[in-house]
Amino acid sequence: MIDKFHPVSKESKTTENVKEKVQGRVVHGSGLLQKLNTIHDVASKFDNTKSREEILKILRSEAKWLLNYDVCFIALLNKTRTHYAFYSLSPIADASELDHKHFLIDEGISGWVVKNQASFIGDIESAPKFNHAIEGRLQELGIRSILVVQLKTGNEVIGTLTFGSLKLHLYTEEDAAIAQLIGLYVATSLRDASIFEDTRKRITQIELINNISQQMSSTLQLDELLKTAASTVQKTFNYFDVTVFLKTEDSSLVELAAHAGSFVDFLPHNYRQSVDKGLIGWVFRNGEKILCNDVLQDERYLAYEYHNTRSELAVPIMIEKEVVGVLNIEDTKLHAFDETDVVVLETLSDQLGSAIKNAKLYDEIRKANMKLTELDKMKSEFLGIVSHDFRSPLSSIILAGRALLKNEAVEQVPRIKEYLQIIVDQANRLNQLAEDTLSITKIESGQLNYFFKIVNIERLVQDAVSMVRYSARHKVEYKIDPNVAFIKGDQTKLRQVIQNLVSNAVKYSPRGGQVTITVDDLSPEKLLLSVSDQGIGIPKDQIGKLFHKFSRVETGLSRDIKGAGLGLWICKEIVEAHGGKIWAESDEGNGTLMKFTLNKAQDGIS
Ligand code: ATP
Ligand code: MG
Image (tube, rainbow, N blue to C red):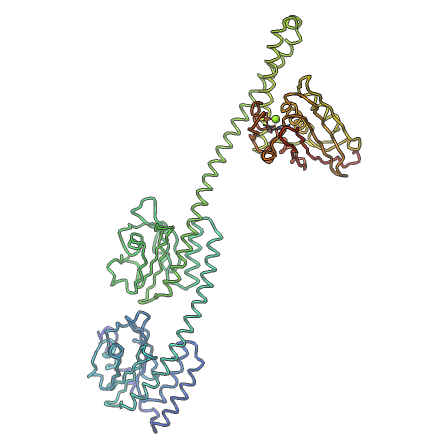
């Protein structure tokens, strides 16, 4: 044990140093009252201290005025009270090997003092507990008498205060009383500082967690999300190493999904390990955290040749009740983590859980969407080809049919004429459907090109009406405000709009009646085109869906009239592409009024 810390040559040199300094020392103790005054002075210096470091600094400079010693240090218990660590206050003897070292509560005189809630004054040799690394080291420095008192606030012992001297039988009961009094002030200040630090740490943590959460919720790409989370957690809390493991499709394996910190170069990207192994595997299987401040003592720990991890904290990442990953931090120091880190990691793993869930959902939707877009594209292409190829044979049928209808021989056989008329009408209908389908596929793929020019509105209406077939029961007329002679638009497409509206007006007025197309001057920029009929009308509650694709009124009389539900959708697309608006006004049984606006030609022609 001794060899481990101090080669003999170094030891004798250090002891020499101690002796030299002892000889040059001012000797105190000119009376109890003076000492009490000094304690009071030192205590008042603690009043405004806010951190452990400040308190230790004051003790380092002031303790020498209170008691004779060659070494002086305090020991502080960790939060779980299983270990304590030393903090050297000694200005003279070099016990730096002990500084910041952790020992089990069962080891050394300090452990004994804490456990028995007693003080110890006496020769180091007669110590009730002797640890080679602690008391053994002090002996090497030549320390012979020792005084160890508790650091106590109320009923809670938070550590010990130790004074050691090269002289034999140095310390008295009076020294013990003085040391206890100092201990009381130190313990109270340390407790206050620790409460202050805890509160400050917690506030900072809440702020930091909040920042990280915001960062996490702002990205939906899983890979990027985990990388950001790992590196932000590592940097923000200054953790030695942070890893995020996720489960894989193969449920027996977990995969390294993100890594930040000092071990990054040690683990290969996409490193996988079995869920049966290691602390990570255990957390995955059990869905519970592991806080391990000495991994070598934990048989679940899977040692890596290249890792010198000593502390590890792993918490599960859950989505609902399923463990989907592990958030893990490691450190090469013993006792690197405490309950505060658990709170940090657990809060973050909660956030990560929902962020991962969102990212996965987003990913699924994105993939489904891509598939749908692809399918939709294929459908449009198919429809485009089919409807295009339909039109040439249909045009031939229609042309041939019309020619035959004019044939004298046919004229004389009414039955043949009637059948021929049916063939021509139905071929026309099919042709219209093919046109509409083609328009749809073009609109959807953004390939419907518009050619805008100045269009005479009266001619446009006339053309459109002439293309609609209607029976003698119907009367179709139009009224055009002379103030709106010209508009700017795509003639063919606008004709299609008026044609669709007029065919609907005729089609949905099976008993005939008046169909009127009116063009009104709406404003200096706009005109209003209305198509009215006296037909079956549209129930009020269905008007809202008329302009949707494949939408038909499925009630009453309209159910028996054939249609694909495309005409109005196409009208809406075309009107809107012209910067206009289209809508319907109607009531069941009372006819229908279809209206749309268009921009007038603004270059002086209107
Ligand atoms: P197509 O695609 O052949 O035009 P369609 O006429 O059924 O078929 P749209 O023109 O889009 O399709 O019309 C949609 C629905 O609106 C029709 O099915 C019909 O129920 C209703 N509708 C349209 N115009 C009128 C109208 N003037 N009177 C009554 N109902 C109408
Ligand atoms: Mg229609």
